[in-house]
Each structure stands twice: as structure tokens, then as C-alpha cells.
Image: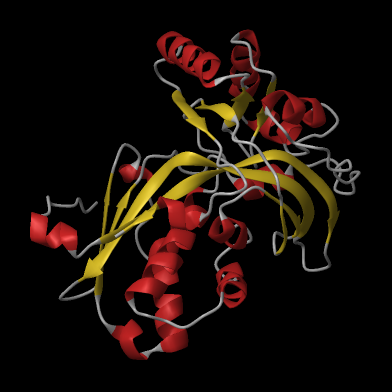
Length: 310
């Protein structure tokens, strides 16, 4: 595993970086399956203010370094979505995209945890490298290109509250949508998405309920009471600790608690940032072996540009 060396001030000034925020499936309904085996989904999705961090700068040759708490769990090589995003842009556009780059990923989110870590990293790589290489491409075309890397990449490129449909390619951006005080908890057990989908007992469930007025945490939690995560039962059969996580969030006062994506990360929505901070501190102290993150989702008005810095 490569690790990044410290940068001098002059080097840092030439570097661009972007947060790859955690994706939270507030609701996820499995509504069908295509002939090619891909599942059809309807999902209410939000993104947090915390996640991985990706940096890019010119290099003498291509290299990719990983640091952070979960660095040892990041696959290096052909399966890594950051380097695949780099190579996808290079193959498609050539020219300036052939210039070598140094990429550094600070891996703060658990791997294979249902919060879109790899897809968010790929989306950040696409955004950063499009800017770095001055590639002329629309957001719609970039999303279509990103879909080839994974179904979650288009929504991670948007990084704002939305409803995703199909295999993840049809997006409806929500306006308005509040910032939600949130606690993310993972028992630090990776969970394979294909394994979860393979364990589904039903693949033709009812769609999302009609969207309500999302004005605050309480109204969002009320709407969620009529929605589901159709992967939660299958995931819990594979990782029984998910039930312990959900129970802990509810005992800590969450207005709503549910698993995100294919798990095993779960979230609790709290009535205020203070309540979320108190719950996070308590869960972290009680379960020091768990990943516990006190955060907040991005409100509808904010975009990926708010979290990019050059």
C-alpha cells in the first residue's frame, strides 16, 4: 500500500482537492429486474458533509496513493474506481488528458459499506480531472460517461438531494430539501452488494410513496415511516449486527433509523445537531469498535462546487 508524503506549501498551492461525500439512501425500493439482471430501483438519496478526500496534481508519471483510516481496505489496480475514472477520461479525450497526474485518496469511509464510497471517489476523480485537464464536457455527458463505472456514479456526480430511478441513471433533483442532522454507524463489517441482492426474496416491490414536503428532520422522518429499504432484511441475514446498530440508534433518540444502500452502514436522523452529537458520542463510547460519524446532509441549494477547493 502506498502512502502519501507531506506536501510543501508551493506544492499544495498547485493541488486541487474535493470531498467525496458519503451517499445515504434514505429509502431504497427494489421495484423490478431487467432482462440483463440489473435491478430497478427507486431511492431517495442525500449526501453528507463528510466523506473521503481526493487530491490531484501534475506528476512526472501516473501514481495513486492512499492514506486514511481505511486505506488498507482500498483495492489497488484495475478494480479501483479512481484510476478507472482517470483512464476512462484519458481514453475518451486524449490530448491534455494524457498528461500524468498524481492522485491521493484519503480514505475515511468504510469500504463495502453502503454509502457509495467507491462511486463517490470515482465521481470526485471525474470532476477534478475534467477541471485539471480542461476537458469540455457537459454535466449530462459526464453523468452518462460515469454510468459506465457504476450505477451510483451519476448520483454521486450530482451530490445533492435527489430521487434515483432505473438502475440509478434517472435522477430527479429535489427542491427544497433540508439539511438533516445525521449519525452514520457501521459495525465495521464489509458487506458485498452482489451477495445482498442475491439474497433478496422479492424483486418486484411497491414504488416509493408520493414525495411529501421535506421541510425539516421531523417531516422527513415522518415520510420515511411509509418508505423502506428493501435490502435491509437480506443484509441483516448476512450481518446480524445491523439489528444491533439500528437498535442503538433508536435508543439514542433517532427520529428514524434505517440501513443505507446494501449496508451495513445505518443512519439515524435526529431532531437537532446537538441531539446527533450526543447520540454519536454515546454510541462511540459504548461501541469503540464501530464506525460512528456525526454529520449532516447537504441541503438542496448546495452543490459539489461548495465542497471543491483549489
